[in-house]
Amino acid sequence: MPERIVLYTAKICPYAQRAEIALQEAKAPNIQYQIDLQNKPEWYAPKVNPASKVPAIAYGGPDVPPDQPSPESVKLAESLILVEFIADLFPESGILPTDPVLRAKTRFFIDGVSTKFVPAWQAYSQGKSSAEDFYKAIEYLQSLLPAEGYAIGPYSAADIAISPFLGRARVILLNDFGGYPAGEGPKVLETLSSGSGRFARFGKYFSDVLARDSFKATFDEAYITERYTARFANFRK
Image 1 (spheres, one colour):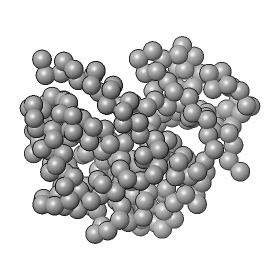
Image 2 (spheres, helix red, strand yellow):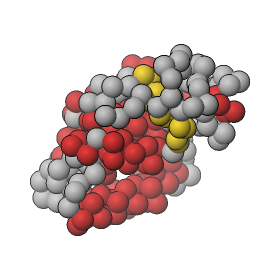
Image 3 (cartoon, helix red, strand yellow):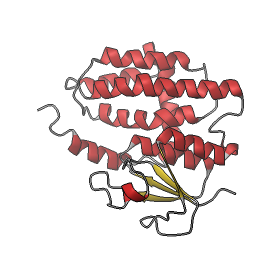
Image 4 (cartoon, one colour):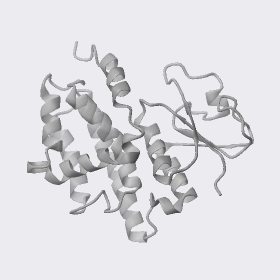
């Protein structure tokens, strides 16, 4: 029986949502504590995560309030490490496949998310690269997708790694936030999500991961839209 899990998270953070999705998929009892990333509690870095980032987990230890973490609990951090930790605690969740080939494919897809998709999306959304540069990263991931299903077929850590970024990309593109040319966002979103043309397979995948119950339960679109509206208000000025 896994021990007590306290997740330190933040609604705005895609990395934190990875851990939240994993806990949902595992149906793992947990306590969540929201960290204000603009005004972090003084106790957070010294008592939970010296890097002062989310997500982090306090595992085990006595039943104490989350804002009074016990030194007896084990503190763990970094989103992909936490996803694997949750998968190991709850192997029946299927987050990490038992089949060695599928497990390797999961990690290979995650590597593509980390080294190609995320950097390309960040550069494009900040107006530092073109839509075509971003499309090249999407084409790479699309080439890894099987004909049906999720990133490796069954739902896995590979999908958990990318879906928080796809959800936020959808909000940004739909509302035409960001540093790319004004009016381009909705057009890029249509290209990626229509399910036809150049990105037909990726468009179906895009729709499928955002329709997953664990994603919907951990994604507050209204809150994220409000925060992004403020964040990008003067971005093109």
